[in-house]
Structure formats: C-alpha cells, structure tokens
Image: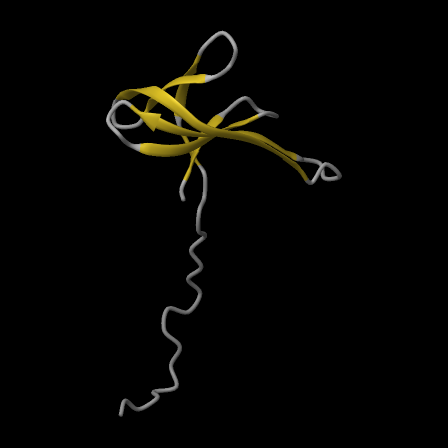
Length: 94
C-alpha cells in the first residue's frame, strides 16, 4: 500500500480544455469554407455538417458562431467555425 504523503500534486496548474485555435480558411462567394491551412493548405472535399450557435446575447460579447464539420483532401476530419462577430475562423478540438 502507498502511504499518503499529504502533498497535493500539481498545485495551481489549470489547463483549459478544448480551446479554439485560430486557423486560416478560404471561403467561396457564399462564405462556405473551400480550403483550410494547417501545416499546408488543404482543400475541403466534403461539408459533413453545419450548425449555428447564438448564445449569451445579454453579455457585452455575445457568442455567434457558424460551425462546419469538414473532410479535407488528405482524409482529415476537422471542426471549424467562423466567429460571426469578428469574422475570424477557428479550429475546434474534439
């Protein structure tokens, strides 16, 4: 049996999970993503799903996002979203 030393491991370390990361996305004329730049530019071959989230409308910075589940030309699946208040694209970890 392991004795309890009374010490707390990793005190003060808080690591946020699932933080969106900025990503470079090219859009077509209608605003749909056509390519995503990761380590290199990859073409979107399939839009698997699309959904919109509008939340916290009462705050100074409400959430308005348009999400896409995409399949890239290298077979990678990715969830990306456009922040509709800033126009910036992000990759969302799953």
